[in-house]
Each structure stands twice: as structure tokens, then as C-alpha cells.
Amino acid sequence: MSATETETDGDRTGDSEASDGANRGTNTWEDSLLAVRDLDAGYGDLQILTGVDLDVRNGEYVTIVGPNGAGKSTVMKSVFGLTNRMGGTIEYGGADITDTQPEEIIYEGLGYVPQNHNIFGSLSVQENLEMGAYILDEVPEESIEAVYDRFPILRERRDQEAGTMSGGQRQMLAMGRALMLDPDLLLLDEPSAGLAPDLVDDMFDRIDGINDDGTAVLMVEQNAKEALRRCDRGYVLVDGKNRYEDTGRALLEDDQVRQDFLGG
Amino acid sequence: MGVSDSYERGREFLIEDPIRAALVIVFVVLALDLVRQLAVGQTQFSEFGVLLKDGLMRGLFFGLAGIGLSMTYSILNFANFAHGDLITGGAFGGVAATYVIAGGFGTEAALGSLLLVGAGGSVFGAALGIGVATSPLAVLAGVVVAAVASIALALIIDRFVYKPIRDRSGITLLITSIGVAFALRYLIVFVFGPGRRGVTDPSGIPSVAVPVIDGTVNVDLHEVSLLVVAVVLMLGLHFLLQRTRLGKAMRAMADNEDLARITGIPTERVVRFTWIIGAGLAGVAGYMFVLWNETLHWFQFWSLLLPVFAAVILGGIGSVYGAIAGGLVIGFVMSLSVVWIPGGLSRAAAFLIMIAVLLVRPEGIFAGRSTA
Image (cartoon, rainbow over all chains, first blue to last red; front, side, top):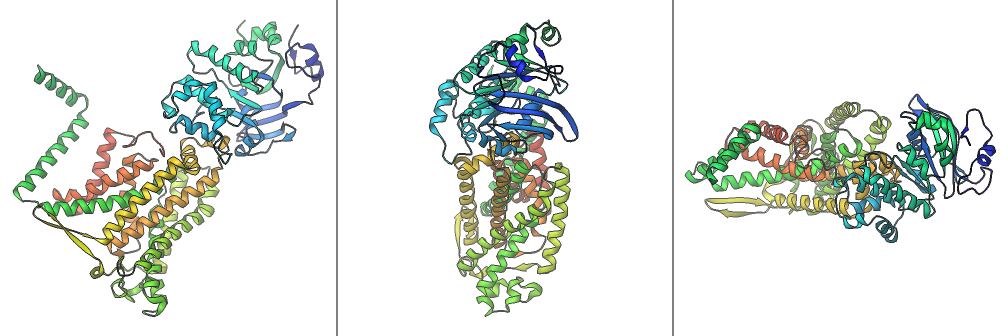
């Protein structure tokens, strides 16, 4: 089986039929939780993305892989309104969020963990989590407890200044913060970046756990093989354009994808 | 062995960190000299007590005024040179309110003269009997109006000047703020005139003589008021920053603005509260300083802006607690330096200390902690 080359095959229904991924409800895309359509976006006048299409469905685990500078992070930033969107649409849960301001997106039920600077370093662990639920009038104690149950190390360090923690603990805190409002979709930008090798597997296991609990995940990952092994579906992005999309397994087994993007 | 050990360590310290070593030596020499001066009576204990008290008063003002400067720096990312004239504007507004009330709303002097704070020598603070004890209501109203006037000025300036250029560089905003400072200062002198006026009735301020070893130190009610107001406001701010949702949001935004936005923190609202708190504290600080200092003039707080900056930078720019600590250090240095050098050089001493501390701790006293 070969991965679908999106540039030559615009028929999305065909993609689905050709693949054997999990979480396949229907063959149409009408049930997309997040639907990015024909997106052009960039920073200032500099255009990075050209005609990007991307879908994430309820409970699905989707990754974006591709070479450096392909615009993977830009897709996520665009969803959160942090880029200059020049064309196309972004829909979430059926609502058009293309022009929604970054501080409004969180009300739609998305959580986002940026790659860098994803915690408030001078605030305590507990305060970071409280900020994750800032839009609520009351601090939801049960959500904080749920995060502490998921990441027990954070409970031990609840009063520690977040900036003094290790990379792995910061990453957990960043995820915990993004999970405070129990989002339907979690965007993760390079969650394994900067982690010691023995922590990378643990991090992926935790992401699996979050997904198993019903939260859809859209992840950008440098560690492409591991990401594709774990996800339901993957997109390969090159030069700001869709190149391939298929189930993670199909992409992993595709000779062309392996040769060009996974180091053989 | 212990001696040679400490000798070795001392030698290493001298060689590896000559600046720090030199500072320690200078500090020790000055401290020993102070002890000598007090012992031989070259400086009296009571004189020294007066200097300490003066230093505390100045330091509290620098700290309280510096908080706003530090907050706008950490949350809006620019050094606001109009901060001093914001304080002057608030002080004139507050003192005008005090004059109007103490002057019986025009019964004791022409209302115009009262509103213009006795421009051209038409009415004097002493004649109106202004003081915390003699006209408490007028002073209380003055404090409130000073805060409100500073806040109003800050919000108006932000809305029409800073907000449209919010995403430009810090340099653009800094230079713009210098322009704002000049415009505001000359607007103030146009309205209130250039005269330096005494705004209180010095004879009406109750004071107690606190005995020290070889004399007394007079502490008056205006000094106590400045101390109480400053400490209460600083504790209040600490509570706000550490315990309230708004305060935590302010710290979060100072820490990481992009993350604050995607967390749903309404950044423009936080900016507005930053101005309200920073300018409000500065307005109160200015009014209390005028009351303590007994005089008011149009470039008063412009000329005090540099020591305020020194305090904020010394404390670690962006840190509220650093502004308070730096303010106290600069206040004490300016006051106590006259033990060794002529009074005219006290400001130079303040800046020397600032430079010296930054050589040792480039990030300031509260290094690396934004608003926390």
C-alpha cells in the first residue's frame, strides 16, 4: 500500500478508503472537529503556508511531520490566530474561527502547548495551572486535582517556581495547563524537543494516555518515526504545502516517505 | 591552617573578582569611618538619625513611584520617560483639590487662585493652614484626586499615544514617551505657572522629638503619613499580585505575553489595570512626597525621574519588589552620602552605587524575577 500523494489526488474520500487507520467512523469529512481548508498563512508579508488542508476528528490522534522549515508549527499557530492568515478557512466544531483572536480561541475548547516558552516561569506550578483556567470565574479544584493525578510530580512541586524545573517537568506542566479546561482537541508542538532520550518514550506514553481518555490530539513532531507509529493519521508537510497524508502506519511503510523524510 | 586557608580564599577572591572585592573594601572602609566619625563626634548620632529618616522617606517615594515604572516596563516592554511628569500632573491635581477644600471653596481666596495652586503667589499653603493635622479632609481628598488625576492622564495618554504604536519596538515607545513627557510638562507649566510654591503650613504639623544618644530626631506627622501610606500600599500590591486573579494574570503577562494570550488572558484589560495601578501608586507617592517636602513645582518629578529609574534598574527592571528594594537603597545612599561628600554630589553617589551594583549583579537585585 502506498501513501496518498495529495498533490496528485484531491479526492479525499479516496484517502480514507485506501487507509486502515483506527477511529474511522465514516468515509466523509463532515465529522471533522478541526477543518483547515486551503490555508495560506505567514508572518507579516512572508507567506509560509500555501493551500494547506488538514482535518482532525473527535478523539483522533493526528501528527504533522516534515523537514525543518516546512511550516509545521505555523499550522498550529495559525489555528490559534498567531499568524497572518492570508486565505482559506479554519473551522472548529462547525464554527468558523479563521479570524478569531488568540485570546478568544480557548473559549472554543482547544488547548495549545507551544514548543518554546510554554510555561510561566516565574509563577508557581499551581499558579500555572490556575492560569490554564483563567477564563473561568472560579479556580476548578477538581481539574487541578485531575492534572496532579495525571502528572504526580507536579503535585509534589506545586509551590515551586515553574522556571526552576527540568525540561520534562516543564513539558508536563505545559500539558497540564492546556488540559485544565478539558479541551476536545489538544495541539502539541514538538512535545519531545529537548527531552533526555529516556524521557521521550514516557512523554509519548502520556500523550497516548491523554488521547485514550478521549481528547483529540494534533501533534507536530521532529521524532517522525515514533510519532507516526503512535498516531492514527499523519500529514507530511513540505515547503508549506501538503505532500502526503495517510494513516501513520501507511506513511511509515511507504518507500517514498521513508526515503525522503524518515532517513530510509 | 585556618588562617592560611582564609588567606588563600581571600587572595582568590581578590584576583578572580576584583570589582566585587573593591566594593567590599570600599564598603568596609566607609562603615569603619562612620563608626570613627560617630565615636569622635565628627558626626552626631542625631544628625545621622535625621539622615537615615530622610533616606527612608526618599526611599519610600522612589519605591512607590518606581513600581509603576517597573510594571509598565515588564508588561508593555518600554521605559516610560513620561512617568515623572505623570506624577507632577497628579500632584498638581491633588494639591489643587486640597487648596480648594482648605480654602473653603473660594471663601478664603479666589477660587481661580485655589484651582491654580496659588499661581503667581496669589495664595499660599501656609495661609490656608494645609497639613494632615490642620486640614485632614483636604489632604485626604488631595491624595485621592492625585491618584485619580495620574490614572486619568495615564489612560488618556495610553489610549491616544501608546496604544496605536503598541507593537512597535521599545525604542520607538521610549522616544515617544520622552515627547509625551515634554508635552505634559509644558502643559503643566502653561496652566499652573512656573513658580515654586510652599504648599503646607509648616507651623501646623505636629511632631515629636525622638531622643537619641546625643540629641533628638524630629519626626513629624507628614513623615509618619508617608511611611504608613507607602507601607500599606506596598502590602496591598503584594496581596494583589500574589493572591488575586488579576494580579496573577499581570505576573503571567509580564512573564510571557504570547502564552498569556493563548491562555485567554485579556491582554488589553491587563494593560489598562497596569496603568491604573502604576499611575495610581505614583500619583499618591507624588502627593505624599510634596506634602513631606512642603514644596511643589512644575519640573519636580521630572528631575526625580532619574533616581527613580536608578532605583528600578538597581532592583532589577520589571520587578515590583526590586523597585521597592532599589528605591530604599537609592534613598539611603542619597541621604547618607553627605556624611562623606558634599550634598550637591548626593545624586552622583546614587548613580555610582547603581553602577557598582550592576557591575556585580548585571540583572539587578531581584534578578530574573519579572513581577514576582
